[in-house]
Image (tube, rainbow, N blue to C red; front, side, top):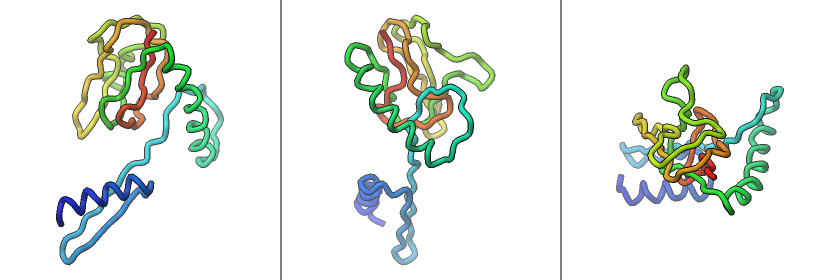
Length: 149
């Protein structure tokens, strides 16, 4: 199958919001699947809620919070699509915590992309005032991760 056709299929998938598509041409077939990432936010432990309600609540709550944090604070954004990890191993302590002072080059989290763990470093000195993602959640390119003041 021609790469141009595959790119068109990917664009179609992104523009329509469809999660999966499979096309067969003769003996060739292509299946393109994308994971729909749910916006992540920090929340206190809550009783179990139906899945439909959980999917709607983070979207509504995340949108109003972003403009306030962007205006006078520095946001560290995800440089790639992947899964964010806040510590090196599940049992070790997080790289950074809210209220911790960081300097440029300090590792603040890891993003796993294509089985590679990429260190995400602070690009500005300051204090971590907000963590906008949870451990083990998928992140999109340019998605805000941390706020530094």
